[in-house]
Length: 350
Image (cartoon, rainbow, N blue to C red; front, top):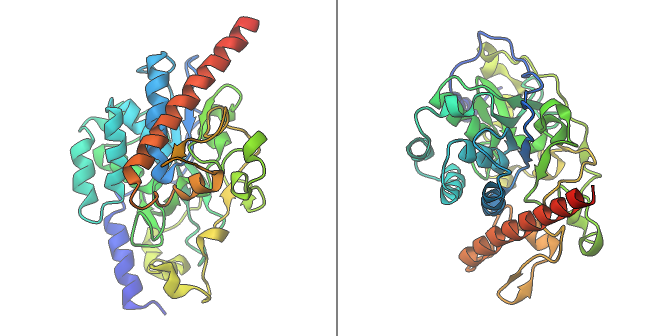
């Protein structure tokens, strides 16, 4: 039996769902055309979004990112892609991430940053990864890797930005979000490099990750458990679920809508903590990621460990937030610069 609380939570979710999509059958986009241009894919970032600001600044200055570079991403990576396509300053990228964690009126704040013609700026160029849930199951596992590359208008594009960044009970006060009448979560729970890179061509796609956990690390970081979490990941589900909005109040998934804070539900069934929300992962190493070319930066005179860095995706060190943000941004600059040098060296050898 559905409680009034759950029904209320579903009403809030439906109100934030964006343009209705019940009339059209859900389908994945085509492979994506790059017109001979090298695409860039950005993975999720959490609060490490400043890293993408540093990387993007270096790549733009070097001419790697141009006005028509194909872009794609999950979560913070999708926001980075959208910000670049919209021509925002890199400082606005940080604002964009902050807006989505706002406890006030995030829609109004986001609308003030996003231009009215955003749909035309993103269409065909920016692919956003979103995790679509199976409404017939009272669980978050098995989400489908949904890639969106076309947007009807500003409201639809904004709704996609919220959907790709929907971290349950963290960036939103509900356990999942709604996008085009579908229950969804942050894209990082299901969408892997194969879906983000157009045509699944990961070899010819520049892959950037702000998180240490999305890469198989070598050298100094290889001994840290959080540097490579392969055992908790499963292959991506690419067939979308045809959830019927008309039956939303009866969805078994609706029982999961009002489960924040998580601590109140721990140990109760069906309960799915974040630790068991399996993330899709294939053994594809990013081209640019923290710690690839050397030690992570120091903070307040102390070297940052990979596990510390991974923890920053959810919370920056208390009292050192500004210093941490600068360190994250600087690491992006360092890693992108090192990658460019490595690429130039390889080109000279060829």
